[in-house]
Image (cartoon, one colour):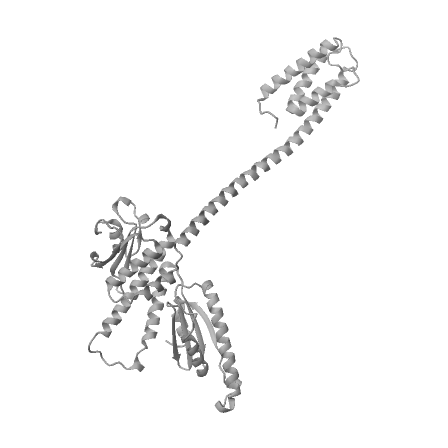
Length: 447
């Protein structure tokens, strides 16, 4: 490394020129001693030191060779001629070694400095990218602060969904409110073709047809189709199509989104729209079926002991629906199970859970008896394991308090009921994913 990056040829010419200039100046000072080697101060070593430390060992040797040629002409009869040249050559190598070590260290620090500058630049860019991403996410969630549970509960509270048109109209209003959907429609599908329109929002220029690639692919493939899924984007006028399938795996309705703001067009929003639409439409179908059954004039007599209660049937339907959502969209739901053999403790738990303020509109609770076991199931839709932690902790604390209080009361009244501490069966609590509900029923001997 030198102060100036020059080719060796140019550096050699510069050193030769400097050598000639020094010799010429010395010739004018003392014609008999142009290199000034007989003076008290060794100017020859000074020049060699400057050039070697500035250019390096190779250029120092070039200057030494130049001085050696001049010395062989001027100092041929001088007895110290050879010793002086060898002494100067030794110092040239010494200065060259110092030059190499010094610049090796300088190169290391230069490389380290360049690396640190590069890392600083990368980290700066990463910081600003992260900040921009954070600001964008923050803006999205400020504009769209709703969770799936909140959106669905809003729809379920707003209307009973007695007819398809009313259900579709309320669904689109909620999608516009929480997900910024500007123009969309819900159509009835029969025999893989579009029929009448249930509802729509926004300014939609023309009626959708099966010739639209996005719609036809969604109905044929029976899954949600995005604009990005199509190879030729000129074949569609829409962004997103979500079909709804009945229990026979037939498409009976489809949600078609034409316009969505750029900030909302992301996987998170699309997934929420997909799940919300399918969940809500399933709820409408379930309610419509129940209303249809209730409106029949003649119903066959049903013995209660041979059939399950309606709340248990609804609970199992909801578990199945949420299991399908878990398998399709990887959105988990949890079931909190409470098991005891003590009927008094069972009664206290029922009273507590029926009026519990921790539950929301989507949460469902049932209590069943399997042989000598009293079992309570609480369903928390769209709640993952970490999200359930606080609720489960609160429930555990309340149930432990009920169990402790009842244990004391029963032991105090033990003579009346002929009970001892061994007669009191405690609680067993656990929470699982909805997909393991059947395994839990088997564990409790309920199937």
